Image 1: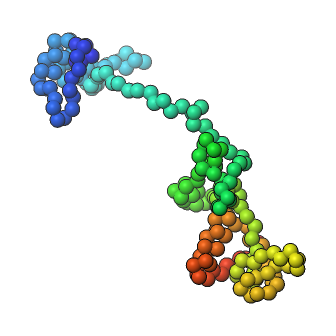
Image 2 (image 1 turned 120 degrees about the vertical axis):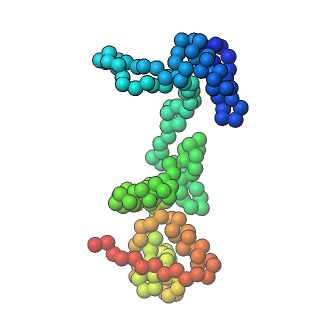
Image 3 (image 1 turned 90 degrees about the vertical axis):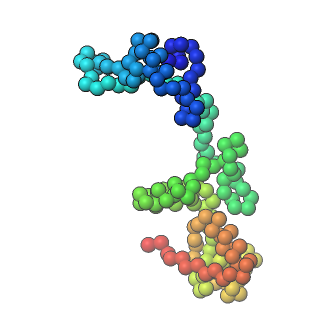
Length: 188
């Protein structure tokens, strides 16, 4: 009615025009008072056995375009503290794989993809773990051997590839006097 008469109509449930007035206007403009019309199948020309409500629908195109949002990264800047990719498209940052996305990969049994996204493509680091006590060991370039701060001696170590965030978290726990011992198994 509003489109054909060139006026705005309040169709909200709070303050609205009377239904009877709108039905009368539809009838005056040559439509069914209910707004329903008999429709015909465009392919066969047969009448559809139901009355269908018709009317004008307004919609607006969103300004979000793929060319404005596309983003990819192979390599680039990393944060100094965590060694993880920086945030944000403008800074050439990494694409975030959040907790929910990780849960989806896990539920689908895609452990290799999960490891690739969370470690290989993020903050992969190689650390050494003391075979004797499970602490993080460090390489002493003067003696050309690995040193364990807990055992206070040169020790045999196991290499462990993990995310640097794990190493950082382990070190933060140790600064809070929380003992962390790692159990690393050799690859089969």
